[in-house]
Image (cartoon, rainbow, N blue to C red; front, side, top):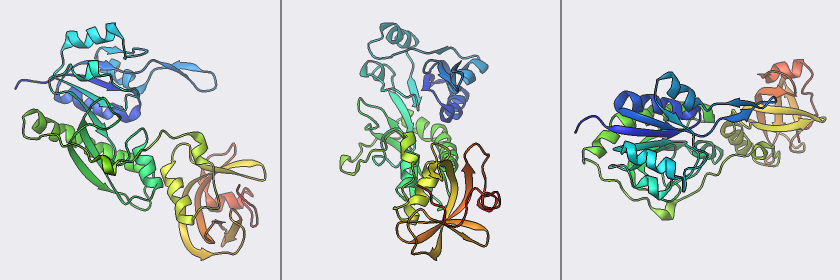
Length: 312
């Protein structure tokens, strides 16, 4: 067949590489993204990263407030009559009226081993839950939330030191490979999408700031996984003597203590935190309130963490 006529739907920074790749591989006619939103303390109206990239590339971009029961939007997509719509982190459910328009359907890049971790934050929750392997998948969308048949996946090991940012970057690289290979095999009829096994489905809900609130009673490994999974946002955080501190990098040590969970233990000028199982968690990088991130040793030298302090 000739060059594919496509539409892209996405919003945040993670979507941008896929927008650029789709523009490179196909005849990209339209980009759909969410409306500009106020950001920061001054609430400055800010365009989403996908809009910025689309305009830079000279691609038409629209930002409908809603896409469900939106006749103007429906007419626009019908007018283009795309062969395929690619969706990457758009942020809204795509209605059936849109799903049914493209010849090859609406495809979605999802960052998990479907049907595990359907939902908004699959990379984060896979790390928080201690998974050692995950996948990035290309799926054909249906009316459910990440429930459509899978076209193809590429697996990726999760290293004990990986945080969500690290893993996202590697999965993005592999997701782009899916567009270069698996997507075209599907279009050429070489791949038949496979239904997901509902019995194995799990859900990865959107992350809230409160998810990062530290619970020192958890096992050291559980807290470590939360530090990794909630980086860079919201991070794992607590208070020491009424002042906020974030734990940005940690590692479980072999040291133990019978002190109360949350207690800071200083060993060779390095801060550790007692966890619920009595094991000590090494605090490698922290960010005291109103300060830049610093190594744990620097936090000790600066007086931000002292032996016997408690994070709660």
